[in-house]
Image (cartoon, rainbow, N blue to C red; front, top):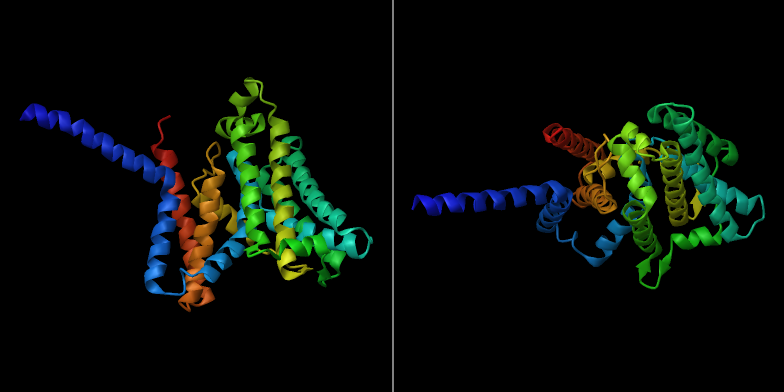
Length: 327
C-alpha cells in the first residue's frame, strides 16, 4: 500500500507542476477566456458577431503598437514615445499627401519611414549616447508630439486614400483586423526565426554576457527601437485611416496601454522574456475589459480604475515570477 502511495505521489506532483507551468506560461490566455465567459453570462450583447469585430478593430491599434514595443522590452528597454510617434507618423503621412502633392502610396510609406526614423533616433541615443531608454524615449515623446502640432498647426489633416483604405473593409472583414494579423505574423517571425530576434533575447537576458559572446549590442538596440517606431507608425496610420484624418492629439496615452498589453501578455520588464502571441492576448484582455464595461454601462472613470488595477496585478505577477526564478 505504501509503495503504491509512494509511486503515485510523484505523478500527482508532476501533474500539478504541469498545470502550474501551463498557467504561468498562458495565464493571460486563461484570463481572457474567463473574462469572455463572465461577460457572456453578464450581457447577451458581448458574444455577437458585430461586437467581436468591434473588439478586433479596437484591439488593432493597441496590439500593433505593443508588437513593436515587445522587441524593446525583450531587449530590457522601454519606449514611452510610441503614442506620440504614431501621431507624428500619421500627421507626416497626411502632410506629404496634402501639401507635398505626392501619391497616396508614397504618403503611406512616408508615414512608416517617419516612425522608423523616430525610433532609430531613440535607439542611437540609447546605444551610442548611453542614455537610459526611459529618458531617451521620454524626450522623443515630447519631440514627436511637438512636431505633430507644428506640422498640423493644431488642426486635423485629411489622409491619403491608401491610408484611408487601412481603416475600411476588405469584403466583410475590417482591414484593421487584417493588418493586425499580418503585423503579428511579421513580428513573431522576426522575434522567433531570425538571428536578430535571438540577439534581442540575449541582450535582454544579460547585456554584458551578450557583448562578450560577440552580439552587436549597439546594433541590436538601434534595431529594436527602429522596429518599435516602425510598428508605431503603422498603428498611427491605422488610427488615422479609421478616422479618415490625422489628428494632432491622436494616440495620447496609448503608450501606457501598449506597455500594459506586453506585460499582461507575460513579458518581463527586466528583459529576456516575451512573446508576440502573449502581447496579442494582453491587448485583447485590455480591449475586452473596456468593451465589457461599456456594455455594462460602467462609467469611463471607473474603467480607468479597473485598467490600472489590471496593470498593477500584471506587474506584480512579473515581479513574483522573477523573484522565484532560480539564479
